[in-house]
Image (tube, rainbow over all chains, first blue to last red):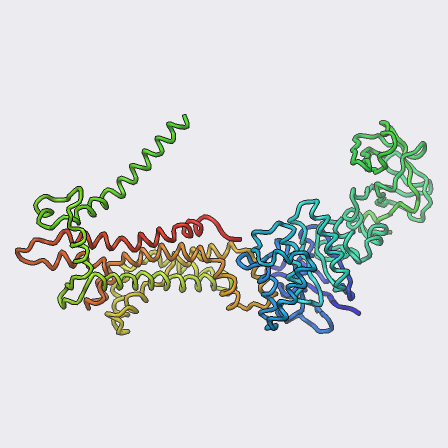
Length: 345
Length: 281
């Protein structure tokens, strides 16, 4: 079943700027969909349109079987977690959680039970009578999620909820969000600019750029078969090497280096190579090593191949590479993009 | 270096205290002498021993044309004026700022600047039309007439506007998702958040209201609406002919007129400073 349908939705501001240029996405029951893209790509606008905080210029949003275009946020059966938590600073945690239910006219006994349950689920039961200012960042984050959970919504909307936390806590909360969403089996949209968050959390990723969808797919699809240069460079860390190249009968030519390759493509292309899918060996194209970065488990080798900057990732176990190495890659690891349109060939 | 700096700072501060408090202390000390001594010898230093006598006379003596006006009555009038003035200003300016900041109507900015422009038109400039309006409404000699024309406040609106603008927008959005309409948002979120701000503005406005002189003088001819600030003048005026003016009572009245605003500031001082320098967010 489909929880949410976004049908050809557009957002145009009065000054003519188009933030979202016709987006169509479905979110299935219990699915966690991540909207990812650089800042200004329209991902937050899209989320806020689902929440009802932004008007919809064109198109239709359908939530749990009814069109919600003209409904107030409170009537849409959604719950949102904000980047800065947006907890009411003058209310205790308990009141923060209960406020929405109170406004809906839920009976008091039911509110108490829901708040208590959410508190226990999120391990904030002991803080229920504190104010948000007395809580740590992670605890505030949990309260913000608790406020979403007690509403028992059709869909959770997360607007970069982890970007105010430090790196360590972020990893921990990421797992908790994933766990929680699995347990509640509620659909969710999660907006982030962090591709690691997107890869780890998502059932499906929607990559947005300039208000348009570049690609929709599972994390592994997006990683292993990027549909455009933009997706290829955005997903994966370190990013994919994108090298202007020329494909002829003899093979693929990068600068003054030609490597034999078995492919049907011909002419000017952009060659995409994941750093972790290129091997350093005895034979292959010569690469002059410029900088080596040790990251502990892996090692990044930066160098110049046929006049182009290239980055490779290899296990840190082996000896450090010499100044001149030979690199090779498997034909199936080479991605070809149209040099002009940027689309996958 | 550091020590000499501290000494210098203290000298400057103490000098300020002396300049501000010196006249007050002299007025207080003089008020404890009897009026004959004051008339003969001028301002006094030290205690004259008539403290209780003078102050209880000022508070309880029935004076004025009708002989019904006591110090207590004037104190009550002053408190009504000060509190009504401050609360009225807070209510009106908060509502105005709420409309300007949170409701996107076309003329919001324009309206704000029009309100702001009224700063250029203080009461003294528009006193004749104001009097005319109040007179026609039949509000002369009433608390309503005393307070109502004074409660529109550009300063208050400006302060609240700046404060509301500093409240993160996500809070409004969270409240909208939680089903809070404009009224609920105002009462459940905005007012509690503005607590310290309200306290700060209350203090400032209470003192301003308390010190009103020109408007009450014009508005109230009935002695039972006289405020303390007017009473000071009244005492000096009552002494006609060969009588020596009751300097001691006038000074005592002046000191008494200063006590309530001073108390308000001392009591609310912490909230006042909090309201001006920090926000609970």
